[in-house]
Amino acid sequence: MENVKSFEPGSITTANLQNILLTAVAPRPIAFASTVDKFGNVNLSPFSFFNVFSSNPPILIFSPARRVRDNTTKHTLKNVEQTKEVVINIVNHQLVEQMSLASTEYGDGVNEFTKSGLTEKASIKVKPPRVGESPVSFECVVDDIIALGNEAGAGNLVICKVVYIHLNTKYLDEKNQLDTEKLDLVARMGGSWYTRCTKQSIFEIPKPLNTKGIGVDKLPNHVYKTEILTGNNLGRLGNCNEIPSDSEIELHKKLPEVNKVLNIENEQLKLEQLHLLVKKQLEDNNLLLAIKTLFCL
Ligand SMILES: Cc1cc2nc3c(=O)[nH]c(=O)nc-3n(C[C@H](O)[C@H](O)[C@H](O)COP(=O)(O)O)c2cc1C
Image (cartoon, rainbow, N blue to C red; front, side):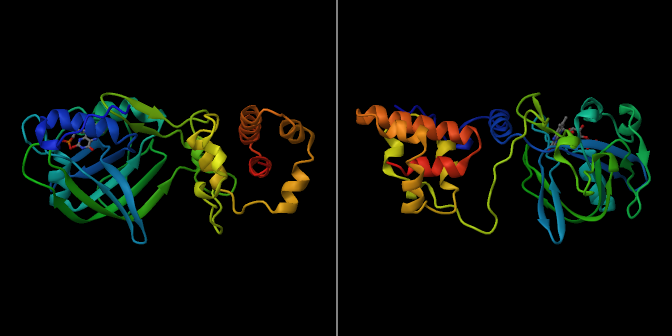
């Protein structure tokens, strides 16, 4: 039987609630935000309440929240309120420790570039400097700031329009595009956990752009009669563009490995062996073979 704990968010403490939200909504990308106050004092702090929300116009949003501890607000928020400018620097593994150091709650006017040993590089269109070590930096003007409440833990949406972009060419591929593998990005998870996007941890899911997958509902009902095919297997099979034709299936049935399975007399054993073969073909990245095998029964 399914065991689920269900409750209203107001029934637990804000600290507890924050813990659940930040552990469940993860991994989160990190905006390493560089700002200046009205006197030009520089500030640098990371924010993982962050994402991209629009490409045209190019809009990034991050949220310096009111501290759960004492309901105070952050320097970054005060600075963007005063100057309406920010540089959002992207964080990869190479600078993750220095980024973490920069999150220390230093006093007014302390420059976290200096504290973390990162390099200030002058921006082109805005006053705050960018992080020289960052693979990608977005110079932004602040379009709007939306306070989500006045209580401890309330976020403040800082809506940023990108006005200039810096890409370190070290992270580009031969087609001059940002290269996911080279970037080695990091993201924030619950507690003090992070995750790292390495060659080993990233994977691709082929998605045809111009065609629609047939859907799991169009697969033969027997997919549920064994426990061999997982939800991921069914998702991949349902992503096929079309059900194989009768003539394709007839031809496919003649393949020795398929024929061998189809000749098994015991029906349950036959189904299990067929599903195992489909699974193997999926593991070998041969979706076309797998979908034909599946439709042989
Ligand atoms: C990876 C990381 C992500 C963080 N994300 C947020 C966030 O999204 N919102 C927030 O209010 N604080 C966040 N913090 C904490 C702030 O960085 C921290 O309070 C910082 O001292 C604020 O600096 P400031 O007062 O100079 O703006 C994060 C800290 C780390 C290390």
